[in-house]
Image (cartoon, rainbow, N blue to C red; front, top):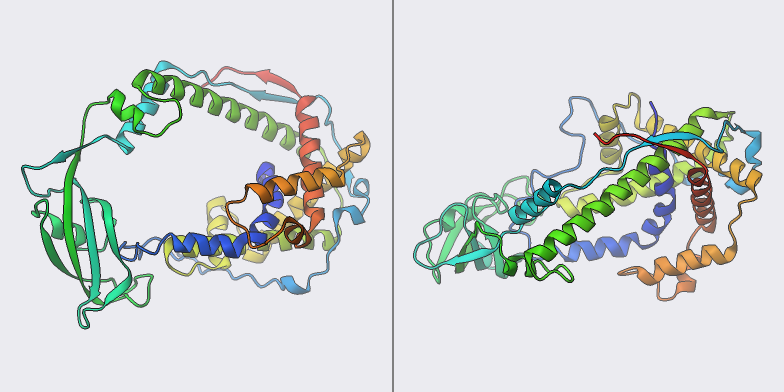
Length: 410
């Protein structure tokens, strides 16, 4: 089974950035859910529980793995390179048609239609209502955390909220306040609410339906810079889709070129200490993703769950340890290949380049757990970034020298 080498490349550059600010990022994500306790998230989980096979547990002792950096070995001792100058790859650049532009705008309209207020009837299924609500425990009448909101937009029938909430608003009129006597699911993510009888006091502020007509006002209201009418929206869509087509083309060329070089190379027995280095990086990435999924879905998602889903999606046969070792071995081979090419072509990464990369990442971060750049930098394994920037330079070298054969777009 071939691995997607571009994903491995992106992962190693990202994992240390994620783990450096992961806890604060997770806390920030969690704070955004303060007013969503009413949402029924009991069935949304990223786990392998929906499979017939038992979950394979990760048993690797990451804390006691002996490691080596890529710079600690002579890469050429473990790689016999195939051709990497002038490799031939095929790619096609998709032409953006008027139909593509219309489809984009239609999808935008469907997902974000202009709303028209209805004042002459009560709430019906499919309406979008603006509501205020307060959730209280039925026995104590005490408001519970995350159960209060003002000006919330809700599509009736979307099943966004717990059973009975949306259907209970059908028939209510604008300005009406009513009590909904409901029960949270037994498996609800917030343990303080699971199985609890509650009362939601809801006020209907407005009733709205989607308009069927696109207009300049709708286009202007999308919040897209320099778009104030439908014609400008079409021009924006044309430019965006053209840019996406070019990015897809460039990605195809890059992925194909890397894969071609990788497939034409042969690899010896890589030191386990180097493989262990990438095992640790993969574990950091997976732990981060598990914590993010846990916050997103409101229920505990473990690293085992994440890995088992990846294994299932890729059709990988074996244990979780086998899967992680397979990825780590591919990463070690890939970076040894890149380093061997870099050594042959005199491609180097300076301390200044690493510093520039990290400063940009630090300054552009929406939040960080570190008060100064120096503190942030000191927490990082700088060799990760030397490897990543070296790999980017080698990939650029391979692509710049590739023979790209243009094929007809499907």
